[in-house]
Image (cartoon, rainbow, N blue to C red; front, side, top):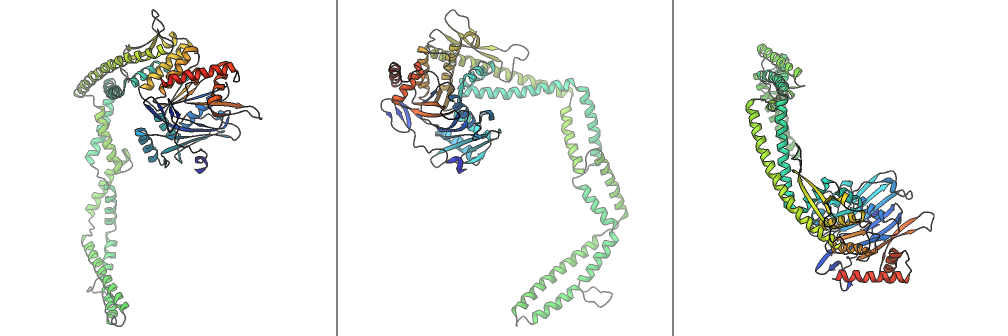
Length: 610
């Protein structure tokens, strides 16, 4: 455990970025909003082109930039591994033959209570300072291990933590959101917790309704087969009921039969033992019984007890033995009185055991199994019932549940239509700020057609549509938007979703692809606004976006050795201007490029303060 825990560099309380005074403490302050860091540190070793690097993250907006192929994608891949994503052995470096991703979380409030309770129940530990250490190791052979709080855990535990802590938005996620089912699910999440409770209530009612519908149809469709099966079960139940086997009866009868079959031998043994033990019973010779002998031994020892106390103790024990022998003698006498060699009773036992064997040959291995078979048969008979009374009762229940499901579906539709209006308005406002002032996103909530109008999620199909400009047709997103427009629409949607709640850390992986100019500035502005309430990690090629960062990390490639490797470093002040100049014009040392970068940083700074 210490080998992987100690590899994480300890962090001091997080830096705070104040809009007017810069770094000053442990939180990011923008206006009146304060954001705590969630993911404080990420260390990646042996993954893709990354040999060994550590990302120290802050609250607010963390931007990751670098040349194409430098390894920015590996940072997102590492995050995916750390939070339970699928392991790809092909990304593990041959030397050292394993990839390790380690992270430190620091949670607060209800989220901290939830996560800490879950991991401590699983046996993990929370550090004294409240931080939680996570680790994921993948070998070149494809084996994977996970650690949480110093303890080995299933990878599923990392995924469980990740669902609460982090959401990744990338181009693949955008493609996922183009599917109708995903769009309906996204609208349901946006609608809020009360809507999600209504949806859960609907799903429960729908499940019950479908079960009754299927049960009624099966009873009607298979009435003849059910009737035949019921007749066979009734025959078996009648036979078992007539015999009426009792739990443990076979063993009791077996023992009783054995006693009756050997009654004479048992009587002789018990009588002989009783005669040897009991005082006053005349024996064939003058041999004293056990009670007499014990009495003689006790009196002899007691006579010398005044000389040696140990003999007194032994005499007392002999007295206890004499009492025990007397008890056994009395029980033997009672046994002899109860012992019966009744041939008629033995015959009854034989007949009863034969009846039980007939049942066990047909229905189970023993009497208990026969009784269990009968219980199951009674349950099955109830399920096979195709009587007119039961069918009528089931049909009434079907109608009741169908009406309930229909009413809940109508409420779901109304809630979705209301949420669709709010969602459309919010996304359209964001698009206006992303240099698409005349574009409008519509959310179409339409009834599902066909016999299967009611489904597990209601009676609606949901589709996001784009009206690119006034007079343009309303088209599905994948048909109505160009590549650059689709990126902006998706970012607007993500901004709106993030405002509706969700995990505290958001990762955006090149969601700004295909845009530039003023639209790129607006993307940066909106990501910075998200960073007021979330920890944001952005992988980008756009200097206009990177200029809004509260912490700027650069992935740099080293080709000096035999093997190409990459590392990550924080850039500030002059270095940051040079990186933006490289992103602007590909010339990090250009005076003109640096001047433009400094102007971009100044504009971003004013925007953030505003």
